[in-house]
Each structure stands twice: as C-alpha cells, then as structure tokens.
Amino acid sequence: METHEPDYVKIFSDIISKKFPEKKSSCKNFLEKGKLSSLDVITLNRILFQDGEIANEHKSYDDESITEILEYQIKTRMTNTEIASVFKLSRNTLAVWKKKYYNKQ
Image (tube, rainbow, N blue to C red; front, top):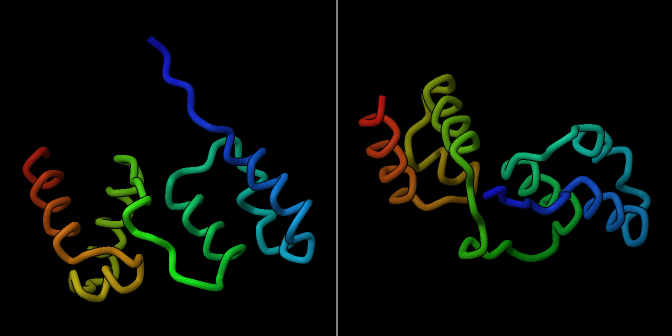
C-alpha cells in the first residue's frame, strides 16, 4: 500500500505567495527542492511564523531528520542540552533517539 504525503512545497508556496510575499527570497532554497524533509518544514515554519512558540506536541521527525540531528551533534560536539536548545527539543527525546539509533547500528 502506497502512503501519500502532503505536498509541502506546494503548501508553503501558496502560503508565501498569499500571506508572506516579502519572505519569498529567504525561502527560495527550500521551495526549489522536490521534497521537503521534516527539518525543512520546521525551518520554514520558523521563518514564516516567527511570532509565538511552535507547539512541540505537533512536531514529527522522520528517520532521516533524526539521524541528521544526531550527526550534527557529533560533528559540532554539542551536549544534549545544547542540541535540544538549537532544535527546540526535549533532552529526553534526544536520549531516546540515541538509544534507538545507536543500538540499531
């Protein structure tokens, strides 16, 4: 069975053209991609809707994004607290991801 994902490029293109035409240049790189990762979607949300906190309970990360975050942590030699602050995550979420993905390999 094939899963259908939302076309985030089209969704964000419409939002930018209707509500935020002045931010089109800062979002151009993301909109040129064929498919957006969950990190790309979160980044676009931050660019467009800077006012107010983004509810963490509605965030979802795919395996590719999780490994990207964990690799970024290794590359920059940051602690769980620092990475959690950068990506607006829970330290406990990072710990669970590390257990899951590092035991997998």
